Amino acid sequence: MDIEITAFDGERAEEADLLAYHRVVQSARDVDLAEAVPIAYEAVVRSVRLPHPGLGRADRWVARRSGEVIAVAFAYFPDGGNEHVALVDVTVHPKARRQGIGTALLEAVLPGLRGRRVVEGLQVVAGGAGERWAHALGFRTVNATVMQELRIADVDAARWDVDVPEGYRLETWSGAAPDHVVESYVRSKAAMHDAPTGSAAFHHPEWTVERVRRTEEELRRSGRDHRVVVAVHEATGEVAGFTELRLPVPPNREAVQQDTGVHAEHRGHGLGLCVKARMLRDLVADDLAVDSVITSTNADNEHMVAVNLALGYTTIRSMVDVNRTAAPD
Ligand SMILES: CC(C)(COP(=O)(O)OP(=O)(O)OC[C@H]1O[C@@H](n2cnc3c(N)ncnc32)[C@H](O)[C@@H]1OP(=O)(O)O)[C@@H](O)C(=O)NCCC(=O)NCCS
Image 1 (cartoon, protein in one colour):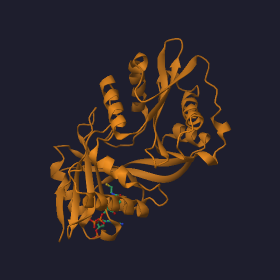
Image 2: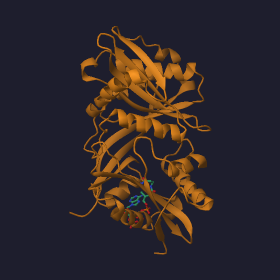
Image 3: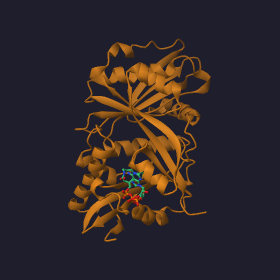
Image 4: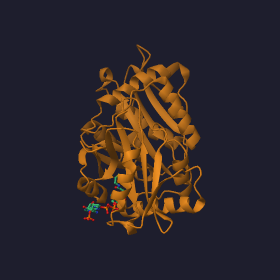
């Protein structure tokens, strides 16, 4: 095969390679994620140069033909209880598919996975080229998620007029968590461990104040504002529930709704709906440059899916996670 595969260093890459990298990513999106918001060249450059907030820095590889980048791959090495997993993605330009390039790129990546036992691909379109390719290479589908989208102009904002349940008050911030609440916020984030993740190897990490501060710093460096709404239980002063959202970097106008969790002792009072509704009200009240919000939720997470539908989200796509061992047993 006339293909050259090398490691890719986003910091040192020449502009021609960065432009070709962006072309691969955008052309693949056009085919695999029809109607998804286009990804700007600058966003791709940021993603290859900066740590991903919460996951850290990726190792990257590219495949070239006649010197031009035609396929890209990356691997993240998550911590916080995920030290056995490498999160890997392989993307081949649509015009170069079914020529063995994706397989060759994956084989070149495997020895670089720092001894991680499981290779996992997250958010692969269900039934699409990625899932079929993965099955051909011995991966199993281990989890199913749904992608939901809320178009702000299409939803009656009255849906977000949700009363705060008695005995709780809301607190909000943007960027860094205030010192007086950060420890309780960290404790509340453990609620994510109750979210179903099928039999995926990657789990919601163990949160600490240090991890929260590191992620906030990575978000700051990536230019993304991060908003949080928490429900505080007034009798104890503890954070009972929270929701998090990442604002887009202009010109992108699509925000990403991140984790939402309610501590087991406080479930069943409507806190999940309440904190998410407040987040949306604030987005509009603060006149932020956002047209839509997307979120990904486990397909079995009926409560979260129902909350999202009540807020005006619609389900736009089914996704899966796939995995296999990194080395043959
Ligand atoms: C998945 C992807 C990387 C495959 O790249 P590729 O270079 O076309 O794959 P290969 O040529 O190495 O395919 C190897 C085998 O996988 C299977 N396969 C690949 N694409 C397939 C498809 N669209 N439908 C059915 N089987 C497929 C086939 O068995 C194929 O062998 P064959 O062509 O001899 O029949 C590419 O389609 C892509 O970039 N998709 C979008 C991103 C993605 O989903 N990545 C995977 C998650 S990490």
